[in-house]
Image (cartoon, rainbow, N blue to C red; front, side, top):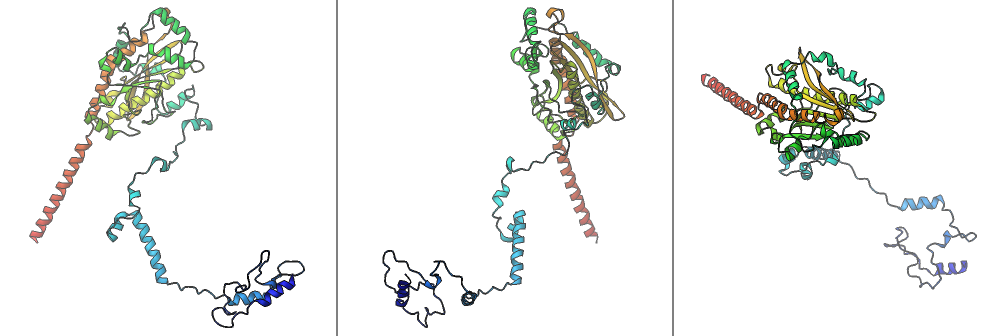
Length: 463
């Protein structure tokens, strides 16, 4: 094998001593160029000296050979950096970045908008917006920390009292305005009204009560609550009570549009307030200008100023839990009316002292309790109280009392609801109109500029 390789080596032509393919320039071509063609199975080696005869492995290259090859590779010249050009490049990058932030600056300099202007003008999608976690700790997390009692428990009353919500029914009785006492009594004494859309006989009611009273809370709400608090919207649609057209009904709607007087976010089982159709366009503009989280007008996405609330409980959660939920929700609703009247000016807020502004009904699978809620305003501080009206048993007198709650609720719709709307509209009428205010301010600014220009021209004439 070595003899064959040696013969191949001697047959190769010698490299030229000069020219482009001289040994000094080491061209990137094979030394086998010009050699006779290889036969099948014959292997061509560029340099047979790199093969060790004993092991067939490549021998180690000496340091002299490596140094010789490195010396023949031409060195790349490093380009000289122009310091002024480098600074100019950095300056251009800074200018481009600034113009991306301020497209007007780019237009003023080049007469063209930046390339990213289209993306800048597009509204940011909800998915790309950063969401920041509220720094205020939620009530449920504070309950887990042990810093506050669990919601709607007996200890929960102390937490609400810190925010001015009073649970002393005996003490509150003497604080109620005599006019409101008369209104409450009239609502209770309304008597038997015409049968509603869901009326039934005593026998059917008792059978339904016996079944529902053994069920869970959902069953109680489905079967019993409509006979205590009939739906205002269904009375309008099915019974033709057109005066209820603008009543808005919410079922377990979260009150996300209002601030809290301590405690958790209210979510009443039933809440009745005003729809937007109850207001004129001018009134809606004023309300929108007035509304904030601490000055709520809306409580859900579509309900304004609730005036009647209902909570139902069953099983381990008894009627007292429903009372606590109602007093919290009703106090928030009362406070909204107080804040509206304060913004209206005058003594309209103080005149609300001792007047029922919201009613609530609590019930479980056996019993019903009715309350009225009112504010007391003294020395600029508002406290919230409830007035006990009535309670009765759902199976009292073998079903003869079944319409007590329904008659009271329908009397609230018929007699108290118009008073509630009138009170709200009167307060809105005294709110400033943002459209008129902006026009007046523009006129004032224009007059001021005119007076200033006239004064300056007079000074120039005198000089």
